[in-house]
Length: 385
Image 1 (tube, rainbow, N blue to C red):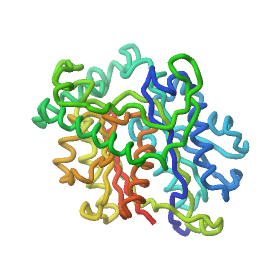
Image 2: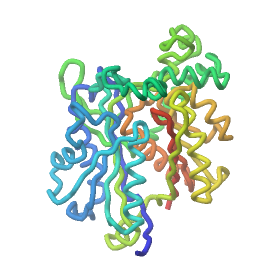
Image 3: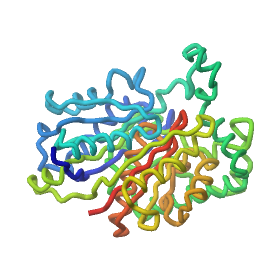
Protein backbone atom coordinates (compact mmCIF):
# COMPACT_ATOMS: atom_id res chain seq x y z
CA UNK A 1 0.00 0.00 0.00
CA UNK A 2 1.47 3.35 -1.05
CA UNK A 3 1.53 6.14 1.50
CA UNK A 4 -0.07 9.42 0.46
CA UNK A 5 0.32 13.00 1.65
CA UNK A 6 -2.66 14.61 3.39
CA UNK A 7 -3.25 18.28 2.58
CA UNK A 8 -5.80 20.86 3.69
CA UNK A 9 -7.56 22.60 0.83
CA UNK A 10 -10.19 24.63 2.72
CA UNK A 11 -10.92 25.74 6.26
CA UNK A 12 -13.47 27.86 8.08
CA UNK A 13 -15.24 28.34 11.37
CA UNK A 14 -18.18 30.07 12.89
CA UNK A 15 -17.73 33.02 15.14
CA UNK A 16 -17.27 31.71 18.68
CA UNK A 17 -20.20 32.97 20.73
CA UNK A 18 -21.03 33.16 24.41
CA UNK A 19 -22.83 30.17 25.87
CA UNK A 20 -26.37 30.83 27.18
CA UNK A 21 -26.57 34.44 25.98
CA UNK A 22 -24.69 34.60 22.68
CA UNK A 23 -25.81 34.56 19.09
CA UNK A 24 -25.76 30.76 18.78
CA UNK A 25 -27.23 29.92 22.18
CA UNK A 26 -30.75 29.51 20.80
CA UNK A 27 -29.65 27.73 17.62
CA UNK A 28 -29.50 23.94 17.50
CA UNK A 29 -25.86 22.80 17.18
CA UNK A 30 -26.73 20.64 14.18
CA UNK A 31 -28.01 23.76 12.44
CA UNK A 32 -25.09 26.09 13.13
CA UNK A 33 -22.58 23.34 12.39
CA UNK A 34 -24.37 22.65 9.11
CA UNK A 35 -24.17 26.28 8.05
CA UNK A 36 -20.48 26.33 8.89
CA UNK A 37 -19.85 23.12 6.96
CA UNK A 38 -21.68 24.38 3.89
CA UNK A 39 -19.69 27.60 3.99
CA UNK A 40 -16.40 25.69 4.07
CA UNK A 41 -17.41 23.35 1.24
CA UNK A 42 -18.38 26.38 -0.84
CA UNK A 43 -14.70 27.35 -0.76
CA UNK A 44 -13.82 24.31 -2.88
CA UNK A 45 -16.42 24.34 -5.68
CA UNK A 46 -14.28 21.88 -7.65
CA UNK A 47 -15.15 19.17 -5.13
CA UNK A 48 -18.22 17.08 -5.93
CA UNK A 49 -19.79 16.18 -2.54
CA UNK A 50 -20.20 12.62 -3.79
CA UNK A 51 -16.42 12.29 -3.62
CA UNK A 52 -16.31 12.91 0.14
CA UNK A 53 -15.39 9.59 1.74
CA UNK A 54 -16.20 10.54 5.33
CA UNK A 55 -17.17 13.44 7.57
CA UNK A 56 -15.65 13.32 11.05
CA UNK A 57 -16.97 15.68 13.71
CA UNK A 58 -15.58 16.20 17.19
CA UNK A 59 -17.97 16.78 20.08
CA UNK A 60 -16.96 16.66 23.74
CA UNK A 61 -20.49 16.04 24.99
CA UNK A 62 -22.14 13.80 22.37
CA UNK A 63 -25.32 13.22 24.32
CA UNK A 64 -28.71 14.86 24.74
CA UNK A 65 -29.11 17.60 22.14
CA UNK A 66 -25.70 16.67 20.75
CA UNK A 67 -26.38 12.94 20.64
CA UNK A 68 -27.53 10.53 17.90
CA UNK A 69 -24.25 10.82 15.93
CA UNK A 70 -24.04 14.56 15.37
CA UNK A 71 -21.80 14.10 12.36
CA UNK A 72 -24.39 12.11 10.44
CA UNK A 73 -27.16 14.56 11.32
CA UNK A 74 -25.04 17.45 10.07
CA UNK A 75 -24.37 15.77 6.73
CA UNK A 76 -28.07 15.06 6.32
CA UNK A 77 -29.16 18.62 7.10
CA UNK A 78 -26.41 19.91 4.80
CA UNK A 79 -27.92 17.90 1.97
CA UNK A 80 -24.83 15.83 1.30
CA UNK A 81 -25.43 12.64 -0.70
CA UNK A 82 -26.67 9.75 1.43
CA UNK A 83 -23.56 7.80 0.42
CA UNK A 84 -21.36 10.21 2.42
CA UNK A 85 -20.68 8.54 5.76
CA UNK A 86 -20.03 10.29 9.07
CA UNK A 87 -18.71 9.65 12.57
CA UNK A 88 -18.64 11.60 15.82
CA UNK A 89 -15.46 11.59 17.91
CA UNK A 90 -14.92 12.50 21.56
CA UNK A 91 -11.49 13.28 22.94
CA UNK A 92 -12.83 16.13 25.05
CA UNK A 93 -10.93 19.38 24.38
CA UNK A 94 -8.91 17.87 21.54
CA UNK A 95 -11.88 16.37 19.70
CA UNK A 96 -11.72 18.93 16.88
CA UNK A 97 -8.05 18.25 16.20
CA UNK A 98 -8.35 14.51 16.71
CA UNK A 99 -10.81 14.41 13.82
CA UNK A 100 -8.30 16.20 11.57
CA UNK A 101 -5.58 13.73 12.54
CA UNK A 102 -7.91 10.77 12.00
CA UNK A 103 -8.86 12.11 8.59
CA UNK A 104 -5.24 12.73 7.63
CA UNK A 105 -4.23 9.25 8.75
CA UNK A 106 -6.97 7.67 6.61
CA UNK A 107 -5.71 9.61 3.60
CA UNK A 108 -2.06 8.78 4.30
CA UNK A 109 -3.00 5.09 4.58
CA UNK A 110 -4.82 5.30 1.23
CA UNK A 111 -8.16 4.40 2.82
CA UNK A 112 -9.76 7.69 1.77
CA UNK A 113 -9.18 10.39 -0.83
CA UNK A 114 -11.32 13.18 0.64
CA UNK A 115 -12.38 13.67 4.25
CA UNK A 116 -14.05 16.63 5.96
CA UNK A 117 -13.06 17.00 9.62
CA UNK A 118 -13.79 19.44 12.41
CA UNK A 119 -15.90 19.88 15.49
CA UNK A 120 -18.92 21.45 17.09
CA UNK A 121 -20.01 22.26 20.61
CA UNK A 122 -22.96 24.01 22.12
CA UNK A 123 -21.87 24.49 25.70
CA UNK A 124 -25.24 26.13 26.18
CA UNK A 125 -26.69 22.61 25.97
CA UNK A 126 -24.33 21.00 28.48
CA UNK A 127 -26.18 20.39 31.71
CA UNK A 128 -23.15 19.70 33.87
CA UNK A 129 -19.42 20.20 33.41
CA UNK A 130 -18.73 17.13 35.52
CA UNK A 131 -20.09 13.60 35.76
CA UNK A 132 -22.73 13.24 38.46
CA UNK A 133 -21.90 10.81 41.25
CA UNK A 134 -24.69 8.45 40.26
CA UNK A 135 -22.92 7.74 36.97
CA UNK A 136 -19.46 7.19 38.41
CA UNK A 137 -17.95 3.74 38.74
CA UNK A 138 -17.60 2.98 42.48
CA UNK A 139 -14.49 0.90 41.84
CA UNK A 140 -12.74 3.79 40.08
CA UNK A 141 -13.93 6.26 42.73
CA UNK A 142 -12.29 4.07 45.32
CA UNK A 143 -9.03 3.47 43.45
CA UNK A 144 -8.56 6.82 41.69
CA UNK A 145 -11.29 9.35 42.41
CA UNK A 146 -9.25 12.10 40.72
CA UNK A 147 -10.27 10.56 37.39
CA UNK A 148 -13.57 12.40 37.84
CA UNK A 149 -12.08 15.72 38.96
CA UNK A 150 -13.67 18.76 37.28
CA UNK A 151 -11.27 20.86 35.17
CA UNK A 152 -11.45 23.96 37.39
CA UNK A 153 -10.18 22.05 40.37
CA UNK A 154 -7.35 20.56 38.34
CA UNK A 155 -6.33 24.11 37.45
CA UNK A 156 -6.00 24.87 41.14
CA UNK A 157 -3.85 21.77 41.58
CA UNK A 158 -1.59 22.84 38.70
CA UNK A 159 -1.26 26.39 40.03
CA UNK A 160 -0.21 25.05 43.43
CA UNK A 161 2.16 22.44 42.00
CA UNK A 162 3.85 24.91 39.64
CA UNK A 163 3.86 27.93 41.93
CA UNK A 164 1.70 30.08 39.65
CA UNK A 165 0.45 33.28 41.28
CA UNK A 166 -2.83 35.16 40.91
CA UNK A 167 -0.91 38.16 39.56
CA UNK A 168 0.71 36.07 36.81
CA UNK A 169 -2.63 34.62 35.77
CA UNK A 170 -4.30 38.03 35.67
CA UNK A 171 -1.47 39.41 33.53
CA UNK A 172 -1.82 36.47 31.14
CA UNK A 173 -5.56 37.09 30.80
CA UNK A 174 -5.04 40.80 30.09
CA UNK A 175 -2.62 39.82 27.33
CA UNK A 176 -5.12 37.40 25.78
CA UNK A 177 -7.88 39.99 25.55
CA UNK A 178 -5.58 42.74 24.29
CA UNK A 179 -4.17 40.55 21.51
CA UNK A 180 -7.62 39.28 20.51
CA UNK A 181 -9.00 42.81 20.33
CA UNK A 182 -6.07 43.98 18.23
CA UNK A 183 -6.53 41.00 15.90
CA UNK A 184 -10.21 41.77 15.46
CA UNK A 185 -9.42 45.39 14.70
CA UNK A 186 -7.14 44.47 11.78
CA UNK A 187 -9.49 41.80 10.43
CA UNK A 188 -7.21 38.88 11.30
CA UNK A 189 -10.17 36.52 11.73
CA UNK A 190 -12.17 37.63 8.71
CA UNK A 191 -10.95 34.94 6.30
CA UNK A 192 -11.63 32.21 8.87
CA UNK A 193 -15.16 33.06 9.92
CA UNK A 194 -18.17 31.80 7.98
CA UNK A 195 -21.05 34.22 8.70
CA UNK A 196 -24.04 32.19 9.89
CA UNK A 197 -27.51 32.88 11.21
CA UNK A 198 -28.03 33.36 14.91
CA UNK A 199 -30.69 34.60 17.30
CA UNK A 200 -30.41 37.79 19.31
CA UNK A 201 -31.56 38.37 22.91
CA UNK A 202 -34.91 39.63 21.65
CA UNK A 203 -35.45 36.58 19.45
CA UNK A 204 -34.68 38.44 16.24
CA UNK A 205 -32.42 36.98 13.58
CA UNK A 206 -28.81 38.16 13.76
CA UNK A 207 -25.73 37.47 11.70
CA UNK A 208 -22.95 35.82 13.67
CA UNK A 209 -19.76 36.95 11.99
CA UNK A 210 -17.31 37.58 14.83
CA UNK A 211 -16.10 36.18 18.13
CA UNK A 212 -18.16 37.53 21.01
CA UNK A 213 -15.97 36.86 24.03
CA UNK A 214 -13.36 39.58 23.66
CA UNK A 215 -13.61 42.04 26.55
CA UNK A 216 -11.91 45.21 25.44
CA UNK A 217 -10.23 47.20 28.14
CA UNK A 218 -9.70 44.20 30.42
CA UNK A 219 -7.40 45.42 33.16
CA UNK A 220 -5.43 44.02 36.05
CA UNK A 221 -7.55 46.09 38.41
CA UNK A 222 -10.76 44.63 37.04
CA UNK A 223 -9.50 41.05 37.15
CA UNK A 224 -8.16 41.52 40.68
CA UNK A 225 -11.71 42.26 41.88
CA UNK A 226 -13.02 38.84 40.76
CA UNK A 227 -13.60 36.16 43.35
CA UNK A 228 -12.06 32.69 42.90
CA UNK A 229 -14.36 30.05 41.43
CA UNK A 230 -12.79 26.89 42.83
CA UNK A 231 -11.75 27.71 46.39
CA UNK A 232 -8.30 28.89 45.40
CA UNK A 233 -6.95 31.56 43.05
CA UNK A 234 -8.48 30.64 39.68
CA UNK A 235 -11.22 33.06 38.60
CA UNK A 236 -13.63 33.30 35.70
CA UNK A 237 -11.34 35.97 34.29
CA UNK A 238 -8.39 33.60 34.07
CA UNK A 239 -10.39 30.66 32.73
CA UNK A 240 -11.50 29.85 29.20
CA UNK A 241 -14.98 31.05 28.39
CA UNK A 242 -17.92 28.71 27.92
CA UNK A 243 -18.77 29.01 24.25
CA UNK A 244 -20.70 27.75 21.25
CA UNK A 245 -19.14 27.25 17.84
CA UNK A 246 -18.13 24.99 14.97
CA UNK A 247 -15.20 24.64 12.59
CA UNK A 248 -14.23 22.40 9.66
CA UNK A 249 -11.37 21.70 7.28
CA UNK A 250 -11.38 19.77 4.01
CA UNK A 251 -8.52 17.31 3.63
CA UNK A 252 -7.55 15.26 0.61
CA UNK A 253 -4.56 13.49 -0.83
CA UNK A 254 -2.18 15.75 -2.70
CA UNK A 255 -2.86 13.65 -5.81
CA UNK A 256 -6.60 14.27 -5.52
CA UNK A 257 -6.04 18.00 -5.09
CA UNK A 258 -3.90 18.07 -8.21
CA UNK A 259 -6.52 16.13 -10.16
CA UNK A 260 -9.22 18.60 -9.13
CA UNK A 261 -7.02 21.61 -9.77
CA UNK A 262 -7.12 22.76 -6.14
CA UNK A 263 -4.08 24.49 -4.63
CA UNK A 264 -3.30 22.96 -1.20
CA UNK A 265 -3.17 25.37 1.72
CA UNK A 266 -1.18 23.26 4.14
CA UNK A 267 0.24 19.81 4.74
CA UNK A 268 -0.56 17.66 7.76
CA UNK A 269 2.83 16.90 9.29
CA UNK A 270 2.01 14.94 12.43
CA UNK A 271 -0.03 14.47 15.58
CA UNK A 272 0.60 12.98 19.00
CA UNK A 273 -1.30 12.42 22.21
CA UNK A 274 0.01 11.63 25.68
CA UNK A 275 -1.48 10.92 29.07
CA UNK A 276 -0.82 12.47 32.46
CA UNK A 277 -2.40 12.53 35.92
CA UNK A 278 -6.06 13.53 35.77
CA UNK A 279 -5.63 15.95 38.66
CA UNK A 280 -2.94 17.79 36.65
CA UNK A 281 -4.64 17.49 33.26
CA UNK A 282 -3.67 21.05 32.31
CA UNK A 283 -0.05 19.97 31.92
CA UNK A 284 -0.91 17.57 29.09
CA UNK A 285 0.88 19.61 26.38
CA UNK A 286 4.17 19.17 28.26
CA UNK A 287 4.03 15.49 27.36
CA UNK A 288 2.41 15.65 23.91
CA UNK A 289 4.55 18.37 22.32
CA UNK A 290 7.94 16.64 22.71
CA UNK A 291 6.31 13.48 21.39
CA UNK A 292 5.10 15.11 18.16
CA UNK A 293 8.52 16.71 17.69
CA UNK A 294 10.22 13.32 18.05
CA UNK A 295 7.84 11.65 15.62
CA UNK A 296 8.02 14.34 12.95
CA UNK A 297 11.63 15.46 13.26
CA UNK A 298 10.45 19.06 13.48
CA UNK A 299 12.12 21.20 16.15
CA UNK A 300 10.75 24.06 18.23
CA UNK A 301 12.95 26.63 16.51
CA UNK A 302 11.25 25.77 13.19
CA UNK A 303 7.79 26.65 14.51
CA UNK A 304 6.50 30.05 13.42
CA UNK A 305 3.23 30.19 15.34
CA UNK A 306 1.86 28.27 18.33
CA UNK A 307 -1.78 27.88 19.26
CA UNK A 308 -1.87 26.70 22.86
CA UNK A 309 -5.41 26.35 24.11
CA UNK A 310 -5.89 28.56 27.14
CA UNK A 311 -8.07 26.28 29.20
CA UNK A 312 -6.81 28.20 32.23
CA UNK A 313 -4.01 30.69 32.69
CA UNK A 314 -2.92 28.44 35.56
CA UNK A 315 -1.99 25.66 33.13
CA UNK A 316 -1.00 27.66 30.05
CA UNK A 317 1.77 29.51 31.91
CA UNK A 318 3.67 26.41 33.16
CA UNK A 319 3.24 24.71 29.77
CA UNK A 320 4.84 27.70 28.03
CA UNK A 321 7.69 27.82 30.52
CA UNK A 322 8.40 24.10 30.66
CA UNK A 323 8.31 23.67 26.88
CA UNK A 324 10.50 26.72 26.32
CA UNK A 325 8.03 28.48 24.04
CA UNK A 326 8.77 31.97 22.78
CA UNK A 327 5.83 33.91 24.22
CA UNK A 328 5.74 36.14 21.13
CA UNK A 329 4.79 33.08 19.07
CA UNK A 330 2.13 31.81 21.49
CA UNK A 331 -1.47 32.79 20.75
CA UNK A 332 -0.36 36.01 19.02
CA UNK A 333 -4.01 36.81 18.27
CA UNK A 334 -5.43 35.91 21.65
CA UNK A 335 -6.53 32.61 23.11
CA UNK A 336 -9.49 30.90 24.72
CA UNK A 337 -9.55 33.22 27.73
CA UNK A 338 -10.63 35.96 25.33
CA UNK A 339 -12.03 34.09 22.36
CA UNK A 340 -13.76 31.16 24.05
CA UNK A 341 -13.41 27.39 24.15
CA UNK A 342 -16.26 25.51 22.43
CA UNK A 343 -14.80 22.18 23.62
CA UNK A 344 -15.32 19.77 20.71
CA UNK A 345 -14.73 22.48 18.11
CA UNK A 346 -11.66 24.09 19.64
CA UNK A 347 -9.01 21.95 17.94
CA UNK A 348 -10.46 22.80 14.54
CA UNK A 349 -10.91 26.47 15.50
CA UNK A 350 -7.24 26.68 16.49
CA UNK A 351 -6.28 25.00 13.22
CA UNK A 352 -8.17 27.68 11.29
CA UNK A 353 -6.44 30.39 13.33
CA UNK A 354 -3.01 28.90 12.77
CA UNK A 355 -3.42 28.36 9.04
CA UNK A 356 -4.70 31.90 8.61
CA UNK A 357 -1.79 33.28 10.63
CA UNK A 358 0.76 31.31 8.60
CA UNK A 359 -0.70 32.66 5.38
CA UNK A 360 -0.72 36.27 6.50
CA UNK A 361 2.75 36.13 8.06
CA UNK A 362 4.22 33.85 5.38
CA UNK A 363 5.31 31.40 8.05
CA UNK A 364 6.01 27.74 7.43
CA UNK A 365 5.14 25.61 10.46
CA UNK A 366 2.38 25.86 13.05
CA UNK A 367 2.06 23.92 16.29
CA UNK A 368 -1.35 23.39 17.87
CA UNK A 369 -1.59 21.92 21.34
CA UNK A 370 -4.00 21.61 24.24
CA UNK A 371 -4.66 19.86 27.50
CA UNK A 372 -7.54 17.40 27.64
CA UNK A 373 -10.01 16.71 30.44
CA UNK A 374 -9.27 13.47 32.26
CA UNK A 375 -5.51 13.84 31.94
CA UNK A 376 -4.18 13.97 28.39
CA UNK A 377 -2.44 16.31 26.00
CA UNK A 378 -2.49 16.57 22.22
CA UNK A 379 -0.25 18.30 19.70
CA UNK A 380 -0.33 18.65 15.94
CA UNK A 381 1.94 20.26 13.35
CA UNK A 382 0.98 21.74 9.97
CA UNK A 383 3.15 23.14 7.18
CA UNK A 384 2.00 25.96 4.94
CA UNK A 385 2.30 25.17 1.25
